[in-house]
Structure formats: C-alpha cells, structure tokens
Image (cartoon, rainbow, N blue to C red; front, side, top):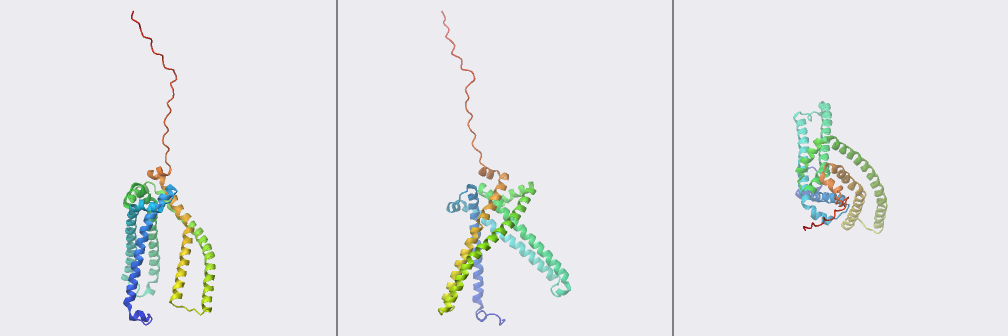
Length: 302
C-alpha cells in the first residue's frame, strides 16, 4: 500500500472502511428523515398560507397521511433522477472508452473538448428538467393532494392535461419564478452576508482572545480543549444557520403564496378556499300592491 497513507489506515484499514460505511448509512438515514419532515411540512405551509395561521402540531397530525404520499413520491423521483444521471454519465464515459480517446488524448483533443461541452450542456439540461418537475410538484401537485386526497401521480396526470391546455401561462410562470428566485437570492445573499459579518466579528474576536488567554494560562490542545472548541463551533454554526433561516422566511412564504394565487383560477377547489362566495341573501317578501278584497256578503233566501 502507498506509504502516503496514514500508518493507522495501513495497519487497520477495516476500521476506516466500516467508519465510511457508517457515515454513508447515517447520511442516507438523515436524507430520508429530512425528506419525510419536509414532505409533511409542505402541507402545513400550504394550510398556513390559506388560513393565515400556523399550528404545527395540529397540522402535522392532519397532514401526516398526505405527507407520507408526497414522501414516497419524492424518494422514487430522487432514485429515478439519480439513475438517469448515472446512465447518462456512464454511457458517455463508456462511449469515450470504446472510442479509445483516453489512450492518446492529445490526438483527440478537439473531439474530447466538443464532446465534453456537449455532455455538460445535456447534463445541465437534465438537471434543469428535474428541478422544474420538483418545483411544479410542490407548487401545483401539493394543492391537489391537500384538497382532493389524491396521489402525486394522479396530481401529475391532471397537471399534464392543464399544461397541454395552457402552455404559455405555465411557461411564463416558470420564467417569472426563475427571475424572482435570482433576485431573491441576490437580496437575501447580501442581507445574510451583512448579518453574518455582524455576528462573526465579535465571535471571532472572542475566539482569538480566548486562544491567547489559554496560551497565557499554559493551556494546550488536549482532548478537552478540542472538544470545547468543537462544541463552541457547533453552537456558532447553529446560530448562523438559525439567522440565515430567519432571513429567508419571507422568501419561503412568498414563493408558495405566489404559486397558490397563480394556480387558484385554474383549480376550482382552491379558488373556493381563497375567494369564498357569500351565501345568497333571501329575497324579501314584498306586500301586494292591492289590498285584499273584503269577504262577499252572505245571501239570504227569503
């Protein structure tokens, strides 16, 4: 084995292999967990925008079944997307290997450059298509699942019929959302950077002062000091993550609301929730224009 590897890895490589497997399993578990949480929270966000009130516990109980159906869809869609990307990249690499362009790359420099550019463009197109499908699922399929208790596949079947009937409207919606997303990313990025600087400057100053004070007191990097530094770093990271999430709340609420108000005229069940019609008022009983006739007198037979 290469001597550049650490001696611990050379002596006990199985320990590190199991550690890598454990990290992969934990990462996959966290991905599945957060996918499920985001699926249920999407319906809670939908309810909150409609009712203008947010109750997470009650919303979680009410939307658990809908969230599970969306969760299954997201897992299957992620697997299909990754499989498509793997097939494309693998077939591209296999084509280059079969053409033997890697044996003497200097002799095939132009085909390699042009092929790489074409492969990159196709890869970006695939990622764009997968992203658009993901966004339209959240924007237009989730309302159908929430109001009509259908699956994501049935929601997409109905959405495809609407897309064929109104291609221009939905294309304009996607284009407008891309423009607004770019603008929101710029504004939120600037605001987040300013706030991060305002937080990191005093935290960094306190950390530097603590390091110099520890050195003056004779402290060195031991297990306990490293553990303390890691804990403080995690707290600082959690604080920055919380601040970034708080700054992005307006965008998180605005974009689903924009999608809901765009989709409402095209989805009657959603329109009835947003713009309920007042009940018809009973018509008043108007009095007759002529007074009733008096009773006819009784005839006497004498």
